[in-house]
Amino acid sequence: MAAISASMVKELRERTSLGMMECKKALTEADGDVELAIENLRKASGLKAAKKADRTAADGVVAVKVADDNGSAVILEVNSETDFVARDAGFLAFVDSVLTKAFNEKQVDVAALMSGELESAREALVQKIGENISVRRVALIEGGVIDGYVHSNNRIAVVTQLEGGNADLARDVSMHVAAVNPQVVRPEDMPAELVEKEKDIIKAQPDMEGKPAEIVEKMTQGRIKKFLKEGSLLEQPFVKNPELTVGKLAQEAGATVTSFVRFEVGEGIEKETVDFAEEVAAQVKASSKG
Image (cartoon, rainbow, N blue to C red):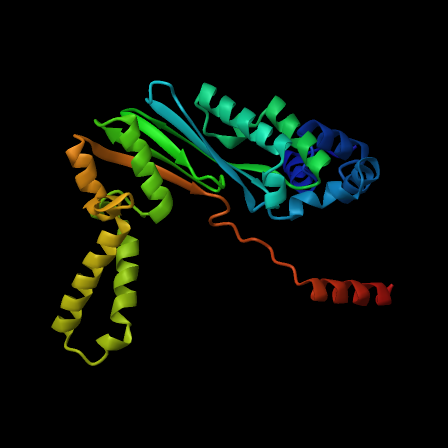
């Protein structure tokens, strides 16, 4: 009898989206042969089982839960493969249960959050719906005055933390962040590597060619200043009143913006695109070899 390692169980879970104990049992029955275990599971669960984990879950929803005293909040992203499933009542109920547990336990570790009943619920939903579903990320914000905003399509959510001010202001700033997508709170927060990269891009632009070094440097600094202003929350014109910057808005309310967290569904995920004609051609070619 082959020893069943944690890495074997992990591989089988990733390839089938099934539970840990079910995968361990299947590997034990297959004497550690992952492919045989998949074959047996596919016979038991249908063809879907071994294919779901290979598909990219790049759609889905984001959600926010704010404490009654506006002293803390949780924001999370749960992915599905299609926007159709992202509107499904069963999927949304699952998202709410994940959000509630994350909020109640102040848990941001996805693996720990999903242990036990929630993972079983996810697996059951995967089998019922026929799509890969995954909890991608969770963030907890605590302290100060906090409120959030979720856009009507449930694809963009923001939580803003203030020192001073009130929940209405935090919500207004969250709405601005959702719409404008600043990179940082203030110019000095911009990562140095991003600034250097931007400088390289500016210096490589056609209108810099042939100019004296000191002119290039002066033009670069001017454009970097503009880059930092456009990317910094406090420097941006407030969406509800462009005559005020967000920084001025907060100042007038006696508040300081401490931080914000913005989640947008699928950002950073490479969504697999399939050319249907190429897929059919590949299948025809494969069958002709058989």
